[in-house]
Image 1 (cartoon, helix red, strand yellow):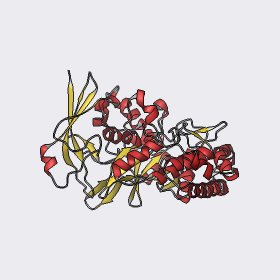
Image 2 (image 1 turned 90 degrees about the horizontal axis):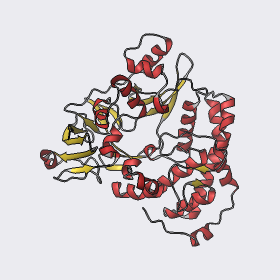
Image 3 (image 1 turned 90 degrees about the vertical axis):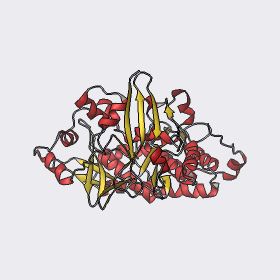
Image 4 (image 1 turned 180 degrees about the horizontal axis):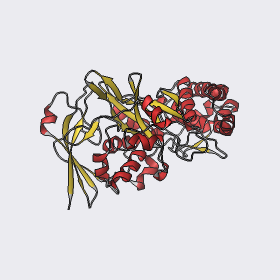
Length: 414
Protein backbone atom coordinates (compact mmCIF):
# COMPACT_ATOMS: atom_id res chain seq x y z
CA UNK A 1 0.00 0.00 0.00
CA UNK A 2 1.19 3.52 -0.83
CA UNK A 3 2.39 5.53 2.16
CA UNK A 4 3.16 9.24 2.20
CA UNK A 5 5.31 10.86 4.87
CA UNK A 6 6.31 14.35 5.98
CA UNK A 7 8.33 15.82 8.81
CA UNK A 8 6.27 17.67 11.42
CA UNK A 9 7.70 20.96 12.66
CA UNK A 10 6.59 22.70 15.85
CA UNK A 11 7.01 26.28 17.04
CA UNK A 12 7.78 26.20 20.74
CA UNK A 13 6.49 29.06 22.93
CA UNK A 14 8.27 32.34 22.24
CA UNK A 15 10.39 30.95 19.39
CA UNK A 16 10.26 32.21 15.81
CA UNK A 17 11.92 29.18 14.23
CA UNK A 18 10.31 25.73 14.36
CA UNK A 19 12.07 22.51 15.25
CA UNK A 20 11.42 19.05 13.93
CA UNK A 21 9.23 17.04 16.32
CA UNK A 22 8.71 13.83 14.33
CA UNK A 23 7.29 12.25 11.18
CA UNK A 24 3.68 11.89 10.08
CA UNK A 25 2.85 9.07 7.65
CA UNK A 26 -0.44 8.45 5.88
CA UNK A 27 -1.54 5.33 4.00
CA UNK A 28 -3.53 6.19 0.89
CA UNK A 29 -5.72 3.08 0.69
CA UNK A 30 -6.62 2.68 4.37
CA UNK A 31 -6.60 6.38 5.28
CA UNK A 32 -4.82 5.59 8.53
CA UNK A 33 -2.27 8.05 9.88
CA UNK A 34 0.80 7.39 12.00
CA UNK A 35 3.02 9.74 13.95
CA UNK A 36 6.31 9.04 15.68
CA UNK A 37 8.26 11.56 17.72
CA UNK A 38 11.95 11.82 16.85
CA UNK A 39 14.11 10.24 19.55
CA UNK A 40 16.27 13.36 19.67
CA UNK A 41 13.27 15.62 20.15
CA UNK A 42 12.01 13.55 23.09
CA UNK A 43 15.34 14.11 24.85
CA UNK A 44 15.17 17.90 24.59
CA UNK A 45 14.30 19.76 27.80
CA UNK A 46 12.23 22.29 25.83
CA UNK A 47 10.22 19.64 23.97
CA UNK A 48 6.44 20.05 24.07
CA UNK A 49 3.83 17.49 23.08
CA UNK A 50 1.73 18.38 20.07
CA UNK A 51 -1.46 17.21 21.82
CA UNK A 52 -1.41 16.17 25.50
CA UNK A 53 -4.02 13.46 24.92
CA UNK A 54 -3.85 12.09 21.38
CA UNK A 55 -0.14 12.80 20.82
CA UNK A 56 1.34 12.58 24.29
CA UNK A 57 5.04 11.76 24.50
CA UNK A 58 5.86 8.14 23.72
CA UNK A 59 8.58 6.29 21.84
CA UNK A 60 6.25 4.03 19.88
CA UNK A 61 4.20 4.89 16.79
CA UNK A 62 0.83 6.57 17.43
CA UNK A 63 -1.98 5.72 15.02
CA UNK A 64 -5.08 7.64 13.96
CA UNK A 65 -8.03 6.14 12.08
CA UNK A 66 -10.61 8.89 12.61
CA UNK A 67 -10.91 11.99 10.40
CA UNK A 68 -9.49 10.11 7.40
CA UNK A 69 -6.35 9.38 9.40
CA UNK A 70 -5.43 13.03 10.07
CA UNK A 71 -4.62 13.83 13.71
CA UNK A 72 -6.83 16.60 15.08
CA UNK A 73 -4.15 19.24 15.65
CA UNK A 74 -2.81 18.57 12.14
CA UNK A 75 -6.22 19.08 10.58
CA UNK A 76 -6.73 22.22 12.66
CA UNK A 77 -3.45 23.58 11.27
CA UNK A 78 -4.45 22.79 7.70
CA UNK A 79 -6.50 24.90 5.29
CA UNK A 80 -10.09 25.77 6.19
CA UNK A 81 -13.03 25.56 3.77
CA UNK A 82 -11.94 28.64 1.81
CA UNK A 83 -8.33 27.45 1.70
CA UNK A 84 -9.38 24.04 0.41
CA UNK A 85 -11.59 25.69 -2.20
CA UNK A 86 -8.56 27.60 -3.52
CA UNK A 87 -6.32 24.51 -3.45
CA UNK A 88 -8.84 22.50 -5.48
CA UNK A 89 -9.01 25.30 -8.04
CA UNK A 90 -5.23 25.35 -8.41
CA UNK A 91 -4.42 21.63 -8.14
CA UNK A 92 -7.61 19.70 -8.84
CA UNK A 93 -8.61 16.88 -6.53
CA UNK A 94 -6.29 16.47 -3.55
CA UNK A 95 -6.33 13.89 -0.81
CA UNK A 96 -6.23 14.86 2.86
CA UNK A 97 -2.47 14.50 3.13
CA UNK A 98 -1.73 16.71 0.12
CA UNK A 99 -4.10 19.38 1.42
CA UNK A 100 -1.86 19.68 4.47
CA UNK A 101 1.36 19.84 2.45
CA UNK A 102 0.13 22.26 -0.21
CA UNK A 103 -1.75 24.58 2.15
CA UNK A 104 -0.36 28.06 2.92
CA UNK A 105 1.51 28.97 6.08
CA UNK A 106 -1.37 30.96 7.57
CA UNK A 107 -3.13 28.00 9.22
CA UNK A 108 -3.84 28.20 12.94
CA UNK A 109 -1.57 26.76 15.58
CA UNK A 110 2.10 25.96 16.03
CA UNK A 111 2.45 23.01 13.63
CA UNK A 112 4.03 23.13 10.16
CA UNK A 113 4.48 20.43 7.52
CA UNK A 114 7.58 19.63 5.46
CA UNK A 115 11.35 19.93 5.79
CA UNK A 116 11.24 23.72 6.02
CA UNK A 117 8.46 26.09 7.11
CA UNK A 118 6.74 28.07 4.38
CA UNK A 119 6.97 31.83 4.44
CA UNK A 120 3.99 33.50 6.09
CA UNK A 121 2.33 35.87 3.63
CA UNK A 122 0.25 38.69 5.06
CA UNK A 123 -1.18 41.61 3.12
CA UNK A 124 -1.67 45.26 4.00
CA UNK A 125 -5.01 47.05 4.04
CA UNK A 126 -3.59 49.36 1.39
CA UNK A 127 -3.05 46.35 -0.90
CA UNK A 128 -6.67 45.26 -0.38
CA UNK A 129 -7.88 48.78 -1.10
CA UNK A 130 -5.85 48.95 -4.31
CA UNK A 131 -7.34 45.74 -5.66
CA UNK A 132 -10.80 46.95 -4.67
CA UNK A 133 -10.18 50.11 -6.72
CA UNK A 134 -9.31 47.99 -9.76
CA UNK A 135 -5.52 48.06 -9.68
CA UNK A 136 -3.80 44.82 -10.76
CA UNK A 137 -3.38 42.39 -7.84
CA UNK A 138 0.06 41.13 -6.90
CA UNK A 139 -1.12 37.51 -7.06
CA UNK A 140 -4.13 35.28 -7.58
CA UNK A 141 -4.73 34.79 -3.87
CA UNK A 142 -5.56 38.41 -3.15
CA UNK A 143 -7.55 38.69 -6.39
CA UNK A 144 -9.75 35.71 -5.51
CA UNK A 145 -10.53 37.10 -2.07
CA UNK A 146 -11.23 40.72 -2.98
CA UNK A 147 -13.21 39.74 -6.09
CA UNK A 148 -14.44 36.21 -5.28
CA UNK A 149 -16.22 33.93 -7.67
CA UNK A 150 -18.77 31.45 -6.34
CA UNK A 151 -17.07 29.06 -3.92
CA UNK A 152 -17.84 25.43 -3.22
CA UNK A 153 -19.92 24.77 -0.13
CA UNK A 154 -20.40 28.43 0.73
CA UNK A 155 -16.80 28.94 1.87
CA UNK A 156 -16.21 32.50 3.09
CA UNK A 157 -13.37 34.45 1.39
CA UNK A 158 -10.56 35.17 3.88
CA UNK A 159 -7.07 36.61 3.84
CA UNK A 160 -4.32 37.20 6.41
CA UNK A 161 -3.67 40.91 6.99
CA UNK A 162 -0.89 42.60 8.92
CA UNK A 163 -1.85 45.96 10.37
CA UNK A 164 -1.06 48.05 13.46
CA UNK A 165 1.59 45.59 14.61
CA UNK A 166 -0.74 42.59 14.63
CA UNK A 167 -2.14 39.88 12.36
CA UNK A 168 -5.82 39.81 11.42
CA UNK A 169 -8.11 37.57 9.44
CA UNK A 170 -9.94 39.71 6.88
CA UNK A 171 -13.35 38.21 6.05
CA UNK A 172 -15.04 39.32 2.83
CA UNK A 173 -18.65 39.05 1.68
CA UNK A 174 -19.34 36.25 -0.75
CA UNK A 175 -20.13 37.05 -4.36
CA UNK A 176 -23.85 37.61 -4.74
CA UNK A 177 -24.40 38.10 -0.99
CA UNK A 178 -27.59 40.20 -1.04
CA UNK A 179 -27.13 41.56 2.48
CA UNK A 180 -23.38 42.07 2.85
CA UNK A 181 -24.25 42.40 6.50
CA UNK A 182 -22.17 39.58 7.92
CA UNK A 183 -19.15 41.73 8.80
CA UNK A 184 -21.24 44.17 10.82
CA UNK A 185 -23.10 41.29 12.45
CA UNK A 186 -19.98 39.46 13.61
CA UNK A 187 -18.29 42.65 14.81
CA UNK A 188 -21.31 43.65 16.91
CA UNK A 189 -21.63 40.16 18.38
CA UNK A 190 -17.96 40.02 19.36
CA UNK A 191 -18.11 43.43 21.03
CA UNK A 192 -21.37 42.49 22.75
CA UNK A 193 -19.77 39.28 24.03
CA UNK A 194 -16.85 41.26 25.44
CA UNK A 195 -19.22 43.64 27.21
CA UNK A 196 -21.01 40.62 28.67
CA UNK A 197 -17.78 39.56 30.37
CA UNK A 198 -16.62 37.03 27.78
CA UNK A 199 -13.01 36.89 26.59
CA UNK A 200 -13.74 37.53 22.90
CA UNK A 201 -11.45 38.01 19.93
CA UNK A 202 -10.72 41.63 19.06
CA UNK A 203 -12.34 42.86 15.85
CA UNK A 204 -12.78 45.98 13.76
CA UNK A 205 -14.46 46.94 10.50
CA UNK A 206 -12.86 48.26 7.33
CA UNK A 207 -14.70 49.77 4.37
CA UNK A 208 -13.16 49.08 0.98
CA UNK A 209 -13.10 51.83 -1.66
CA UNK A 210 -15.86 50.01 -3.57
CA UNK A 211 -18.16 50.38 -0.54
CA UNK A 212 -18.06 46.82 0.76
CA UNK A 213 -17.44 46.34 4.44
CA UNK A 214 -15.10 43.64 5.75
CA UNK A 215 -14.33 42.51 9.26
CA UNK A 216 -10.84 42.13 10.65
CA UNK A 217 -10.56 39.62 13.51
CA UNK A 218 -7.27 39.61 15.36
CA UNK A 219 -5.36 36.33 15.27
CA UNK A 220 -4.75 35.31 18.85
CA UNK A 221 -2.33 32.53 17.87
CA UNK A 222 0.14 34.72 15.91
CA UNK A 223 2.33 37.57 17.15
CA UNK A 224 5.14 39.61 15.68
CA UNK A 225 8.46 39.25 17.48
CA UNK A 226 12.07 40.14 16.95
CA UNK A 227 13.31 37.83 14.24
CA UNK A 228 9.93 36.74 12.93
CA UNK A 229 6.59 35.48 14.18
CA UNK A 230 5.69 33.43 17.25
CA UNK A 231 2.84 30.94 17.23
CA UNK A 232 0.61 29.44 19.89
CA UNK A 233 -0.64 25.89 19.74
CA UNK A 234 -4.27 25.48 18.70
CA UNK A 235 -6.72 22.64 19.22
CA UNK A 236 -10.33 23.05 18.17
CA UNK A 237 -13.06 21.65 20.38
CA UNK A 238 -13.54 19.10 17.59
CA UNK A 239 -10.04 17.85 18.39
CA UNK A 240 -10.36 18.21 22.15
CA UNK A 241 -13.62 16.22 22.14
CA UNK A 242 -12.06 13.45 20.06
CA UNK A 243 -14.67 13.73 17.31
CA UNK A 244 -14.44 12.07 13.92
CA UNK A 245 -16.47 8.90 14.43
CA UNK A 246 -20.05 9.42 13.14
CA UNK A 247 -21.41 6.74 15.49
CA UNK A 248 -20.17 8.55 18.59
CA UNK A 249 -20.03 12.22 17.62
CA UNK A 250 -23.64 13.11 18.42
CA UNK A 251 -23.29 12.26 22.12
CA UNK A 252 -19.76 13.66 22.39
CA UNK A 253 -20.61 17.05 20.85
CA UNK A 254 -21.42 18.79 24.10
CA UNK A 255 -20.49 21.94 26.01
CA UNK A 256 -20.54 19.91 29.21
CA UNK A 257 -18.09 17.40 27.86
CA UNK A 258 -15.94 20.20 26.41
CA UNK A 259 -15.61 21.60 29.93
CA UNK A 260 -14.56 18.16 31.21
CA UNK A 261 -12.01 17.67 28.43
CA UNK A 262 -10.69 21.21 28.80
CA UNK A 263 -9.93 20.37 32.44
CA UNK A 264 -7.98 17.29 31.33
CA UNK A 265 -6.01 19.29 28.75
CA UNK A 266 -5.31 22.37 30.85
CA UNK A 267 -5.61 21.40 34.50
CA UNK A 268 -7.92 24.41 34.88
CA UNK A 269 -11.64 24.73 35.51
CA UNK A 270 -13.33 26.47 32.57
CA UNK A 271 -16.90 25.42 33.30
CA UNK A 272 -18.12 28.94 34.07
CA UNK A 273 -16.37 30.52 31.06
CA UNK A 274 -17.75 27.86 28.71
CA UNK A 275 -21.23 28.26 30.23
CA UNK A 276 -21.10 32.02 29.65
CA UNK A 277 -20.40 31.38 25.98
CA UNK A 278 -23.23 28.92 25.50
CA UNK A 279 -25.61 31.29 27.30
CA UNK A 280 -24.53 34.19 25.09
CA UNK A 281 -24.80 32.10 21.92
CA UNK A 282 -28.36 31.19 22.88
CA UNK A 283 -29.30 34.79 23.64
CA UNK A 284 -28.07 36.10 20.25
CA UNK A 285 -29.23 33.14 18.15
CA UNK A 286 -25.71 32.00 17.24
CA UNK A 287 -26.57 28.45 16.22
CA UNK A 288 -23.35 28.04 14.22
CA UNK A 289 -21.54 27.24 17.47
CA UNK A 290 -20.14 23.94 16.19
CA UNK A 291 -17.02 22.37 17.73
CA UNK A 292 -14.61 23.98 15.26
CA UNK A 293 -15.77 27.37 16.55
CA UNK A 294 -14.38 26.74 20.04
CA UNK A 295 -10.76 26.02 20.90
CA UNK A 296 -7.89 25.73 23.33
CA UNK A 297 -4.56 27.48 22.74
CA UNK A 298 -1.11 26.73 24.08
CA UNK A 299 1.50 29.24 25.19
CA UNK A 300 4.47 29.14 27.57
CA UNK A 301 2.11 28.52 30.51
CA UNK A 302 0.41 25.55 28.88
CA UNK A 303 -3.01 25.03 27.34
CA UNK A 304 -5.94 27.31 28.11
CA UNK A 305 -9.31 28.36 26.69
CA UNK A 306 -9.03 30.54 23.58
CA UNK A 307 -10.89 33.82 23.14
CA UNK A 308 -14.40 33.37 21.72
CA UNK A 309 -14.61 33.77 17.94
CA UNK A 310 -16.94 33.26 14.96
CA UNK A 311 -20.09 34.55 16.67
CA UNK A 312 -22.93 35.61 14.37
CA UNK A 313 -26.49 36.42 15.44
CA UNK A 314 -29.37 34.96 13.45
CA UNK A 315 -33.12 35.46 13.72
CA UNK A 316 -34.97 32.31 14.79
CA UNK A 317 -38.63 31.78 13.93
CA UNK A 318 -39.00 28.72 16.14
CA UNK A 319 -36.96 27.35 19.02
CA UNK A 320 -33.27 28.11 19.40
CA UNK A 321 -31.22 24.92 19.20
CA UNK A 322 -27.45 25.22 19.53
CA UNK A 323 -25.07 23.01 17.56
CA UNK A 324 -23.64 21.45 20.72
CA UNK A 325 -25.69 19.86 23.50
CA UNK A 326 -25.53 21.65 26.86
CA UNK A 327 -28.05 19.95 29.13
CA UNK A 328 -29.29 16.43 29.76
CA UNK A 329 -32.19 16.78 27.34
CA UNK A 330 -30.31 18.18 24.35
CA UNK A 331 -29.47 21.55 22.80
CA UNK A 332 -32.73 23.57 22.82
CA UNK A 333 -32.17 26.87 24.62
CA UNK A 334 -34.69 28.24 27.11
CA UNK A 335 -34.12 30.14 30.35
CA UNK A 336 -34.66 26.85 32.23
CA UNK A 337 -32.20 24.81 30.18
CA UNK A 338 -29.52 27.51 30.31
CA UNK A 339 -29.83 27.60 34.10
CA UNK A 340 -29.90 23.81 34.27
CA UNK A 341 -26.61 23.68 32.34
CA UNK A 342 -25.03 26.11 34.80
CA UNK A 343 -26.01 23.84 37.69
CA UNK A 344 -24.62 20.81 35.85
CA UNK A 345 -21.34 22.69 35.48
CA UNK A 346 -21.19 23.40 39.20
CA UNK A 347 -22.19 27.08 39.05
CA UNK A 348 -24.27 28.44 41.93
CA UNK A 349 -27.81 28.96 40.55
CA UNK A 350 -28.19 32.43 42.09
CA UNK A 351 -24.88 33.48 40.54
CA UNK A 352 -25.96 32.02 37.18
CA UNK A 353 -29.32 33.81 37.24
CA UNK A 354 -27.66 37.14 38.01
CA UNK A 355 -25.21 36.57 35.15
CA UNK A 356 -28.00 35.65 32.73
CA UNK A 357 -30.00 38.75 33.64
CA UNK A 358 -26.99 41.05 33.23
CA UNK A 359 -26.16 39.44 29.89
CA UNK A 360 -29.72 39.69 28.59
CA UNK A 361 -30.02 43.32 29.69
CA UNK A 362 -26.72 44.26 28.02
CA UNK A 363 -27.78 42.58 24.78
CA UNK A 364 -31.32 43.94 24.60
CA UNK A 365 -30.45 47.48 25.67
CA UNK A 366 -27.59 48.00 23.23
CA UNK A 367 -27.66 45.71 20.19
CA UNK A 368 -29.59 48.05 17.92
CA UNK A 369 -27.57 51.10 18.94
CA UNK A 370 -24.35 49.24 18.17
CA UNK A 371 -25.49 48.58 14.61
CA UNK A 372 -26.60 52.19 14.20
CA UNK A 373 -23.21 53.44 15.43
CA UNK A 374 -21.41 51.60 12.61
CA UNK A 375 -23.88 52.71 9.95
CA UNK A 376 -25.56 49.35 9.31
CA UNK A 377 -28.65 49.53 7.11
CA UNK A 378 -31.89 49.71 9.07
CA UNK A 379 -33.69 47.00 7.09
CA UNK A 380 -30.99 44.44 7.80
CA UNK A 381 -30.90 45.43 11.46
CA UNK A 382 -34.68 45.06 11.75
CA UNK A 383 -34.53 41.54 10.32
CA UNK A 384 -32.13 40.54 13.08
CA UNK A 385 -34.51 41.41 15.92
CA UNK A 386 -35.67 37.79 16.17
CA UNK A 387 -32.14 36.70 17.11
CA UNK A 388 -32.63 37.90 20.68
CA UNK A 389 -35.78 36.01 21.63
CA UNK A 390 -34.04 33.93 24.32
CA UNK A 391 -32.56 37.09 25.85
CA UNK A 392 -36.10 38.52 26.06
CA UNK A 393 -37.36 35.30 27.63
CA UNK A 394 -34.60 35.45 30.25
CA UNK A 395 -35.61 38.95 31.36
CA UNK A 396 -39.27 37.99 31.82
CA UNK A 397 -38.77 34.48 33.22
CA UNK A 398 -39.62 33.60 36.83
CA UNK A 399 -36.68 31.51 37.96
CA UNK A 400 -36.98 28.89 40.68
CA UNK A 401 -33.34 27.96 41.45
CA UNK A 402 -34.11 26.09 44.67
CA UNK A 403 -36.45 23.75 42.84
CA UNK A 404 -33.94 23.22 40.04
CA UNK A 405 -31.24 22.38 42.55
CA UNK A 406 -33.43 19.72 44.16
CA UNK A 407 -34.20 18.20 40.75
CA UNK A 408 -30.62 18.37 39.61
CA UNK A 409 -29.49 15.37 37.58
CA UNK A 410 -25.80 14.64 37.62
CA UNK A 411 -24.11 14.93 34.26
CA UNK A 412 -22.13 11.91 33.14
CA UNK A 413 -19.77 12.54 30.22
CA UNK A 414 -20.13 10.22 27.24
